[in-house]
Image (tube, rainbow, N blue to C red; front, side, top):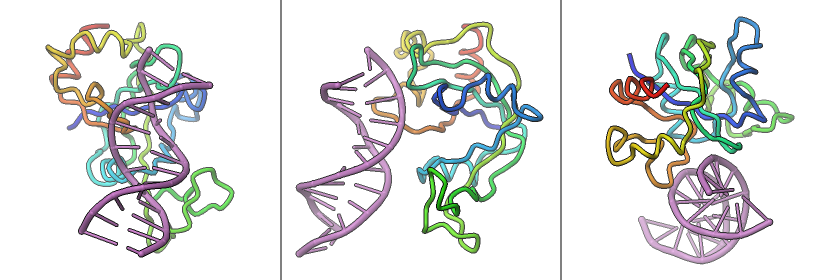
Length: 154
DNA sequence: GCCAACGTTGGC
DNA sequence: GCCAACGTTGGC
C-alpha cells in the first residue's frame, strides 16, 4: 500500500463537494501532466489512502482523507471537444490520459496548512515532495512515515 | 536535439 | 495581480 496527496482548487472541487457526491466518490479527471498520469495509471492501487489538499485558496493545506476506489482507467473526458481538458491526441483506441476514482473518508478536525507543514521542512518533512521548491505536481507520493507524522499534527 | 516562446500552477 | 518554476511546443 502506498500513500498519496492530491491537490484540488476548492472553488473548482472541494472536500465538501466530494462528500456530497453519489457514494461520496469522484473520478479524478482532467489531469494533463505525464508524471501525474503515470502515477494514476500505474501506481495508485485500490485502498491506497490519499490526502485531499486545497490549493490556490486562502489557506492552502491538507483538509481531509480519501481512498483510491478504482484503479487507473482512461479519462474519457479527453475525447470530448466540449470538455475543458479536451485533447485531440487522446482517442479510445490510444488513450493518452488516465484517472482514478477516489472516495471520501473523513475531513480533518482542522486544516493542516501549508504554512504549518513548512515549519517541519528541516525536520520530519525534509523529504516531503509538497515542500520541494517549485513542485507543482497535482498528485504526489507520501511516505508512510510522512503520512503518520502529518496526522499527529491534527 | 536544442532552445526560445509560451502556458500553467499556485503561493504570496 | 505578480511572478517564479517548470512543462510543452515547435522552428530550426
